[in-house]
Length: 335
Image (cartoon, rainbow, N blue to C red; front, side):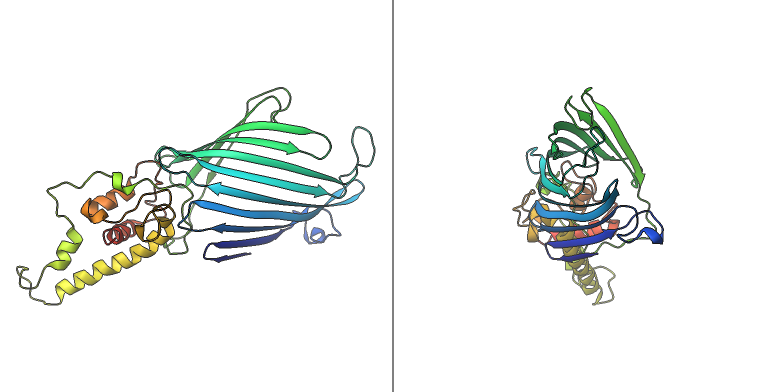
């Protein structure tokens, strides 16, 4: 279950066991958990923060363990001049009945645990991959403290837009994941996200996590090309257009251009405003786009959106289609 209103995101779910219907209640076997999350993230500001937690129960050797956890986190997207993104989280938990100590045979008392992680991450390969370095700390509540580091790489497989991969190297002799024998140890994952139908981009589409690069750094359009082909077409009068027999034709072209810009404004708010600011005013990780029309024509802006330089993410062909890119470029030309 989820509720989203402007910058607010509220999610909750009850996760049952893999048992049959006889195991779905608290009186049956298996782990059952209620999980929740509350987050705040403005589309025009590159910071997200929130809290999340869980309450659940699981059978143990001497009854049922009722456990709970709560955590707070903050994430800052990557920005200009190579500034990486950052993520920090702190979590505390409680186990009411941990069970029997396997070494001593004694019943373990209720305990509280805590842990924290801090990570720096940076998009690479024109936004096709994300590299992160993470440090973890954990106190299991029974006197065991562990520290560890991890190097993570998530990536899209080149030329296969629905194929993705993930690699992690755990480092450090005291890492909870590597054990006292040292490291690194490796793990990885590969997955496919195959669409089952065409999806139309709307204002509800989530803004990309990574930061956008300055559009202003894109190469200028060829000086031999029209300064703005869309507006040039829209401004031709019936008398000046050779062979034009309909006085309404230029108005139709102008209306089509205006309609594209209007749709582009919606797409911009969903995909670009987080970095370039509402209305292209700047203030986020990206620069202001005001007056971009004087530097590039619509075709040049569209080409830059399709093939951006890092750290701007690649939004074409997904989530933006060919027409979406054209509409966003038309909107930027109006700023």
